[in-house]
Length: 151
Image (tube, rainbow, N blue to C red; front, top):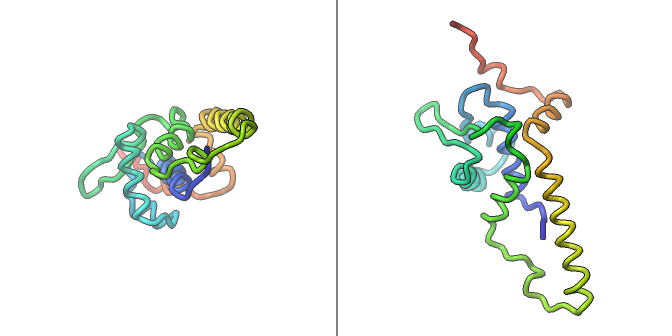
């Protein structure tokens, strides 16, 4: 069953932060924590899992951090949700609960269908879409201060 956990929402927010504020340079986790208020204990573990899954790239060194592994228009929210769902160890509370015939044959399949529909919708939303929403709402991006046009 799909339920937005704190870790899932933090992961989506962190990837959006990287997409929105990168400006061509890696984004450090402490910058994400400063801007978004995401606790580092959630953030580091989640960012590492996103690197292992191929959605982010970790850059080492003093100016290191994280960047998107692909263009933001090629990464969907659904991909991030799947990574976090795999990371979360909590079992589905309805998996082992006994159910009546109505519950097992009607309600749970209906809930599974709804989860699939939600995932289809999340797959259709890219981080470019979310960046455009952020821009339209007037949220300032720190990417502009990181751009350097000196040749």
